[in-house]
Image (cartoon, rainbow, N blue to C red; front, side):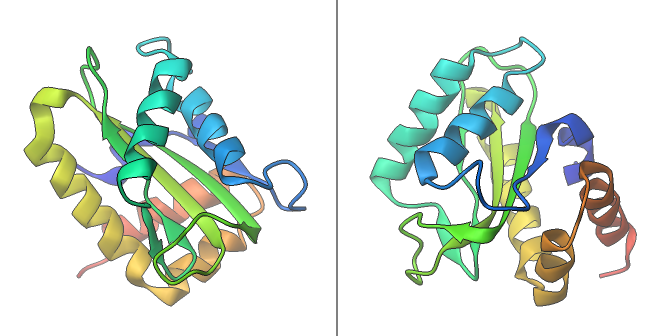
Length: 156
């Protein structure tokens, strides 16, 4: 499954000025709202589950990236949302640096294997400094989404 299949342009937000999302809980709240936007899950439930996951171990993997993820009871399909914060947000990342790219993934409890494959694909995508730079330079959700599609279409 491609990341572009579980992400949509209406689930990408960019805080270019760094004034809308200044704390980790705010970012998780925005991600939860976007993930619940189609009505197939509840934003408050998603937020609660994402926060519980962060309490176990931060999903801030370093290099300005966090990949909040959790299974959601009753959810049928994998879903993703992306928040870009070029100014950075403190998020207890493994390298203690602010996080600028938050790529959240939720999925059904029964699809753990598929969920792990998506997380691995996402980690490979965001491992590239060039991809991270280009995402953070995106001025619209359309531009960020197109970049992800472009990266997925490129040969390995």
